[in-house]
Amino acid sequence: WEDSFDDHLCRAMWLDDRNEFVKLVNGVESFGSLDCKNNLPETVRDLMLLHDSANCAAAVLAGETDAYLKFKDLTDLGWSFLHHAAKHGDPKITALFLDNGFLADDRRDCDELNLKAALPLHVALESIRDHILLKNRKSAIDLVVLLCDDEYRNILETIRLLALKTTNVFNEFLLYLKQGKMVELCALLMVAHKELLPLLYMENTLVSTSITQDDDPLQRKETLLLLNIFEKIGDDLSAYIRLEHLRVIYRYGFCIMTY
Image (cartoon, one colour):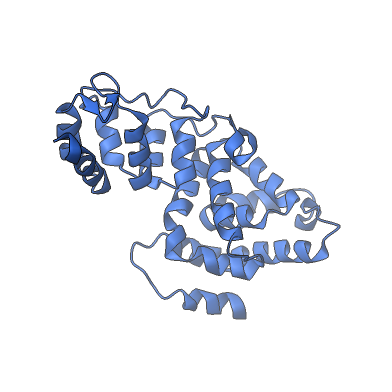
């Protein structure tokens, strides 16, 4: 039984089968060499994050398991579990945690990502940035088309949930704008352009004065283009990435290339 327990547990969390998960963890006293009688090991947490197993996590939060996973304690990295969910791009677990008192405004030093006083939103944006920069996509149009790909839907939904709950999200947006961080800007606009752009245009100064990449005219041009794209077709883009069924991405790519 012990030899196959890992497989059973992994399958239950992969399927996010709440009943099977509770049955398994309540029926075993150890997970490998780790005692499960009182506290579930971090290995279980890691599997939940890997598979975005919100039903299983909800069972633990509801006290359905004999053992307890200390979700509200800091992890060995000094992160909250919401920071971990943000890094993994887990929208279901992120929504669950936010609904159960986890704070989107919680700031932690994330040395692994070289971030200080980082919000969960920062961690999610850093995660998507690292992934996209590997593809060497830098122009505004390239970024918008790339983020329409289905593989980014989970992380973008995670960012949307965190942005809605982050108190000063507009200030974070302005900071990214001034730093010329195109990936973070594009991701935020994908999920929150309706909230961010009106605030930006309400500023007493012109939008262009909020962009301080004076030493890089091309970067400045691309940033303004990005804002213009979302001013014109932001609603279509936001609606597209939230669709549950795949649609032909090239339709929106064509709109961007020819508007």
